[in-house]
Length: 320
Image (cartoon, rainbow, N blue to C red; front, side, top):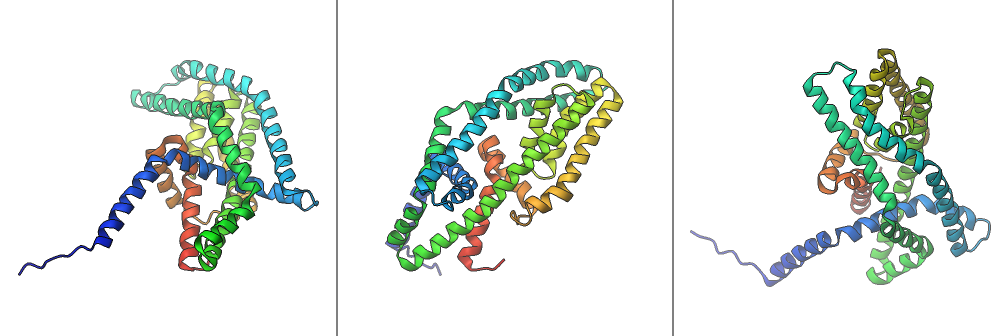
């Protein structure tokens, strides 16, 4: 006997609205991505703003001071390093085939290495394009500025919109996400900087050419757990082997020592339990992020997973 299935108007409307919401989210993915990056930047800068507020400086002025200090410092660093970095990166890409020719590699290894170099070049080109995309940077800075400036006002608006109970719960979730993301992002930036500096010093001591872009590469790939340090060390080892076997072994030793110092000294001190995400889940999220949004997807994969994890824990009321 056939059963008749009745679908209510409410179910149809809900389905249509759900599909429409998904389409809108996909259509607005670029803006949502900038908003997420802006929120991430806000979590990084908020402690510095609060530091100035403690000295009885108005929050608006504290935000302005923070922006001037951070942008001024980054601008100075970029102005000093960018010309050298661009020149060395160009020379690195041009000279790499010559160094590889000095190593007896099988054709498959050469193809693999060439593919890796193309990926490395893509990462570096993406880094340069990010800093050169003035509009996107300005948009993110403006979003973050107003998030820092009117955070208390946003909380009040959420309460007015959702009501007292739901508004307070939503604010609690936002605060938990901000705290967790802030700890992770600040710790990750310190780790990336420490790894890049450590490898740069090691490459200089070994007199490996193109030390700056190679060290920058190790810092960028630090965001990818387990595989990142291995992948970023390959170009330096190849360059080292092109000079001499001993130099190649030395480059591998530098990568190993820096990685061990990071895992057993820096990570416990800097990161502690701020991530709280298993390495396997991070690798899966990074792979999905790379598939969906390329390099940017790789960068925001971990903070997105952390955000989702915090929201689910807070929503279902689970304790850590």
